[in-house]
Image (cartoon, rainbow, N blue to C red):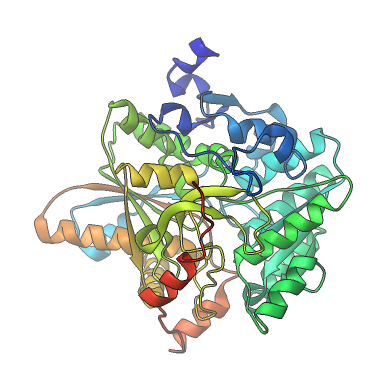
Length: 458
């Protein structure tokens, strides 16, 4: 494996430039992300301890900080061929409309039935669950992209799928819910009365609209108490960023083919799956000193874990039953305002991305949701794709950077991730078009109160 790790990434591309291997960014990080901790002992989680929650092969990927490339199993590559490689598009119409000298490209991940990049990891995790002989999997979903993708993947491999969907999204996005059910998933609004942790959360927060942290707690509880089940997660974890590296590998292959060097790379950031996947090979070059890029993470102002959170160990879930992860966090009890319609609702950020941000390898900015939907509408009218609200966070900053180039006359090349389509997010667009959408930014006092409850880790 050592010799394999020294081979340039191009050897791992098929003739159509679809990756044959996932790239593990952690292998090139000088300062590795902090390990997951057992909340009971305060010591790093072992593979044996994680095995009651996750699939065995996924645990190996989660804990491996050293192997640079993981060969993608042929069954997964065959599935990827249905929609990969995904398009890297030059936004000529956008450039013309903005009258900017900047060159703008977007990597479009919405050209599959699930409608987003989430399918890249969903099919991998379902594959390993099936290979292990499991009966089914449990998960959470916020805006619904991950639940939709996992439902599709489980249907492909004949696995049962139990999804806990954040209650406000369950109510706002009934069509996303119905797609999951069409693929055979059992979908429950979270928090629910089906689990001990759900009942506890409802007792403490009557009428709560839920959060990803709540839904994670319920999904984990059901997984560990149900024979033949394991839990799978759509973002945050190292294994997910590994699978999503196909986005960045394809992007880099296409740009390299035409001799294009991006100056700015922009991705929306909730838990980190899309951002981590998009920037992976570029960040790898940056870490190895081979090239430099300006990398920008964009998050919602209503859930600003990077820009206003604390870099510390915290629970990944509201029920405090999951391992502790060191990340930028607003506190596991933080619940975004129900007025927040743009996805990206997780209280923390990937440990890998948190470490990179902490070490100064990338920037982060937060944007208000009315501004995000301004950008989404402008993009839809200009480029003809209705973007997911999550994607529109990246669009917002890409537009801003392109307009800066207009002011300065600089001919910079901008690449951003268009994570998926917004056709199941029309309730949010309706609120925006009707003038009912409002911005909510948590106060310093609210964030401080949540962060004050972080677990004490020595």
